[in-house]
Amino acid sequence: PESMPTDYEIAQSVKKQPITDIVESFGLSPDDLEQYGEYKAKVKLDAIERILTERTADGKLILVTGMTPTPMGEGKTVTTVGLGQAFNQIGKDALIAIREPSLGPVFGVKGGAAGGGWSQVLPMEDINLHFTGDIHALTAAHNLISTMLDNHFTQGNDLNIDVNEVRWKRAIDMNDRVLRETVIGLGGKTGGRPREGGFILTAASELMAVLCLADSIEDIKERVSRIIVAYDEDGAPVTVDDIDATGSVAILLKEALKPNVVQTIEGTPAFVHGGPFANIAHGTNSLMADEVASHLSEYLITEAGFGSDLGAEKFMDIVCRFGDMEPDAVTLVASVRALKYHGLDMWPPELDALEDEDIGAVQRGFENLDKHVENLQKFGVPVVVAVNRFPGDTDREVETVIEHCESELGIDAAESNVFSDGGEGGIDLAEKLTSAAESESQFEPLYSVDASIKEKIETVATEIYGSDGVEYHGDAEADIQQLTELGLDDVPVCMSKTFHSLSDDPSLKGVPDDWTLEVKEVYPSAGAGFLVVLTGDVLTLPGLPGEPAAAEMDIDPDGTVSGLF
Ligand SMILES: Nc1ncnc2c1ncn2[C@@H]1O[C@H](COP(=O)(O)OP(=O)(O)O)[C@@H](O)[C@H]1O
Ligand SMILES: O=COP(=O)(O)O
Ligand SMILES: [Mg+2]
Image 1 (cartoon, rainbow, N blue to C red):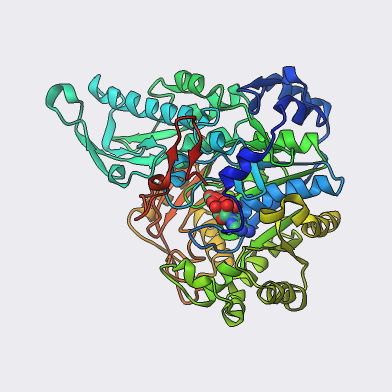
Image 2 (image 1 turned 120 degrees about the vertical axis):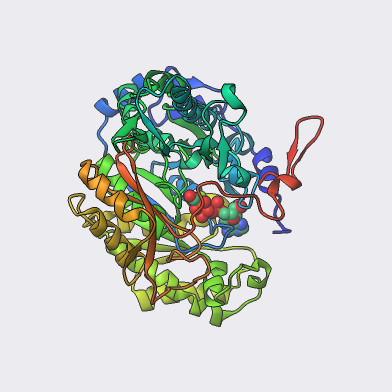
């Protein structure tokens, strides 16, 4: 918005405090930290050990999710950071936990993921770029497995791996579409065994999920060892342990395992750790960050990516199950622009067309918001809607949304101005969330892990996405058969689906009906402990847009960066 400085300018204008001072009052002392400069730190594993044993986990957990977003995102991260600040402004001890950004979107469409306006985590330019190196470490570890696997072929393939059943691709933290499907091993005898290969975004790597669910070096080794990278000629799984890569991969991840802690603009401590997207992966920060934060403060506010059909569903059905925790309240972020985007049935999005006041379009967009509210209520957790106000929104538009939530849906809603006003702008929302969190939540996951694979997929597809059913394409049925025979079926399913729609068709807005979910493939993340279900045309390695954010970036001789948002 023209009246406001850019995110970067705001971030640079803030006098940051040393990270040791920021975390002191929450019970972390300087020797609990490994500092990466004055403003970034990792929490040492023995300090975590002490905190988890000495302190009770009585922090209430507030989950931040959203309605089906425009490609720009509707402000979950901004709201999470803003709420952390607002809670502290109303005298409640609160910490936030969010994911660390991937360079893919930073240089692509969405830009950074450090919040925005007066609700950002700092130093945003470090956090959005190399941060403390976790994503680089994951990329290296992922590709170490790839090279050990291909080397196995060159050294005689005594595991009898079926070259057409290699499942482990390479990883890169960049939206580089031409690497999605590749042919490798060219160059004759010294070039290795020619075969089809490809790359995925590091955020989609199973190692990312493993890092986010592991709680110690021992655990990460055990999980890494179980990762299935291929199948042999008899169809038996080949694991990371079979190709002798477990120890070296764990060594590469030993620093990344430790959660990062930084500060928000108003000095709230923020855990920023792990970065799985919620369309192609499970979509929330590490469990370790959640565990530590909920032992250190009264409230933990954490975000699940994309709409509630993706991040929140997986948070409830995967993360809460593994972490033995449950949300005490959920805030569903809505925006006037996203409501109009659905109300105008807009695809592809022309975001500037969403600027004009259009009460009718806002109202026609309610069906999408209502479905997300209904979905969240299926988990038995109280919901508060946050109307994240953008500069162009009119009072009438915002009031229409609040009125709809309170009188039609009978749930609390609050206008949020945390982007323009920081914590001050989220006080009403924070107060509504604290009272929602007081009520006894009747949290229940959506399905039992003992249900069949098809039952679990069909439950999510019909209950959450609103499909009439599920069709299995390609080898999906054979995958399910094989996984059941291997005894890998009694785990949660991690649905990989477009975030542009409740359905698997990005162009369908609102609440699509008369459609069935197309499942293309089901594969095990045996290290993470869930099954990944690929649907529709979801891409595990996105591409750059027509106008990449990278094209607008620059750096001055004195190191001042521009174009990063
Ligand atoms: N109220 C707002 N006013 C202006 N820009 C906003 C507002 N909320 C979010 N944004 C911007 O929109 C983009 C998406 O916000 P983000 O919080 O990352 O959304 P999400 O986490 O839901 O994807 C970011 O560039 C952010 O700075
Ligand atoms: O995985 C996606 O996360 P955001 O919705 O926060 O961009
Ligand atoms: Mg976000």
